[in-house]
Image 1: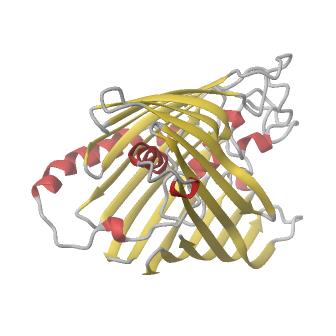
Image 2: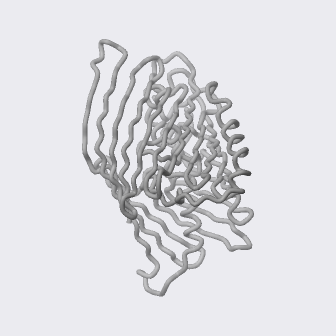
Image 3: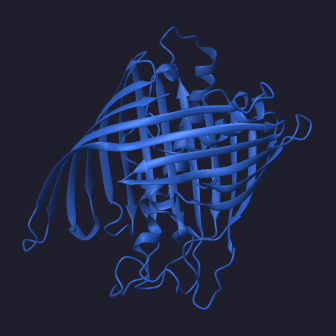
Length: 378
């Protein structure tokens, strides 16, 4: 956290300084939005908001059931080469290569009646088929733009957008898919979105019953075209998908540790895209609670990610990443950097080639990964 204490304020100030001249200029460069960044995978807050907007705007087309259904999907095939260099001479280094079907998603959206929508996302990943999302959305009117989302969903904690094939460190630390109820309200048309939610997290305090005792809150603002920023809070950071896997005893934490997130994203001059995000714990985990039961230190994990994308032409984009973590153990690299090239050579078809280098704390290991991904959306 010490390394990143000035990261987000500085990033937001830089964006604010550039907003005025950008608004005054007209550019004939190709639109950044035309570039396919990454077909699926990362569930950014922006995509969740767009899903809500689609639900609000979708009309009932007819009386037949098939008039109410929309089907979409995603297929990702990946090839990767990974090299792990362990600093301990007693541990042999590792190399691996693989080509595989990485992800398949099938999405069914249904307009039940006006103000009522259903959403189901079936997913294949790591040789498993499961329901990744399944929820009902209730929406209000233009005069009262409230909404309620109930069911299995990605709770509104974190932003997690990325140009890259691999997930950013912020997502690994904070992304949480749970059965939840989330209620929200939109102010100023679509400029500000505020939401509150409750869920039963994967980890519990010692002696607690298995009850709904975790909460989430978020606020996001879109004051100008291309500029979006926000913050969020969760009362149970260790309940996230990946982080919960390194909790030593998920049913016996001394206390639940809250987490917070802040982000800013800015697209400008039709070619450039800046992403910055920080996710961190608001208190310490007790010694031995995460990573290693023999650990004698309290830990306060945090992660950050910064990316800068440049649209070379309409369907070709290059982006760089710098990220890292504190108290990330072997779950998160202490520092991470890399580059990705995305080429949308056909409509809804993207070829991404990525290189990432990660260094872990206490000189545990260094990892180099080259990944190529072919993805199609339909």
